[in-house]
Structure formats: C-alpha cells, structure tokens
Amino acid sequence: MPNGQWKTSTRKATLPTGWDKIRRRILTRDNHTCYKCGNHATHVDHVANSAAGGDDSDANLAAICFDCHQTKSSAEGGRAAQARKPKRTRPAEAHPGIVR
Ligand SMILES: [Zn+2]
Image (tube, rainbow, N blue to C red; front, top):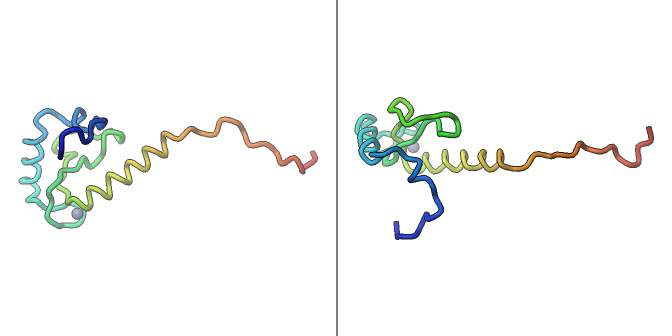
C-alpha cells in the first residue's frame, strides 16, 4: 500500500502488537482455510469484532478469505454507521387534519 493511504484509519493502532506474528500463527493453525466458505484464506478475522466485545485472543480469531472478510467487514461497517445515525428526538405529531 502506498505511503499516505489510510492516513485517517485507526485500524493499525487498534490491532494488537505483533499482529503479523499472530496472523501467521492463526493462518497456520487453520490450515489457510476460510472458516466461512472453505476457500484459501489469506486474512485473519476477529469473529466477534471489537464493537461486539470481541478480543484478540486466539479463540476469537479465525482464518478467512479476502472475499468473505470484505463482505463481513462492510456489513459490520454498515451496522456501525446505522448505529451512529442520530435518533429521532421529537415525537411524531398527530396529522393536522385529525380533530380530537
Ligand atoms: Zn471465504
């Protein structure tokens, strides 16, 4: 990845120290097999992400292929964006045409 890209991403800071080693260990443990589809895995996934209370323990890490990781991560990002949306603060008003 060229320098400067992902400058605003905090992803790297949130990954545990020695992530590269951990990643390689998990891929070897799982025989480079995606835990979702069974294809060749090159990524390691946090099965429960940090927003869901997942940690960096081996039990929460699993080998995953690029496609499944992308699908899962974008779904998680979509849910997070939904959660950040401001909630409606004013109660719904009665329709002006309804006389009570
Ligand atoms: Zn997969």
